[in-house]
Length: 120
Image 1 (cartoon, rainbow, N blue to C red):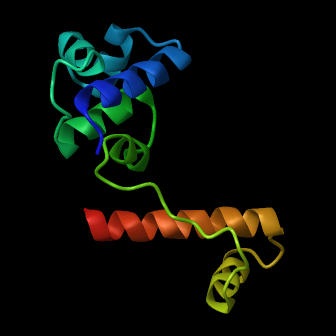
Image 2: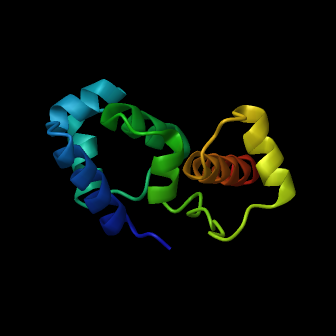
C-alpha cells in the first residue's frame, strides 16, 4: 500500500527529473501550486482519480502511470516466459513484422490495458 509521503516523493522526483517548477507543473495540470507542493511533501492524502489525472497532465505522464504510483492500479505482473499462441496472434495482427522485443512490449501494453479495465 502506498502512503501519501511515498507518493509525494515519487511525484516530486518525476517533476524534478523533468526540470519543472512546482508552479509550472501545477499550472499545466490546472491545480494550484500550493496544493501540488502539499501533495509532494506528503501533507495531503493521495488525491482522488480526477485530481491525479490533473497532476499527470501537469507532469506530462500517463494516467496509468500516476494510478500505479498512487497504488490504485497495481504494477503489471508480466510473465517473461514464452508467449502464448493467443498473445503471438495479437502481436502478429498488430504488426506481422514485429521483433521479439516489440512483441514483448505489445504484451506489456495489453496486460496494462487489462488491469486498467478491471480497476477503473
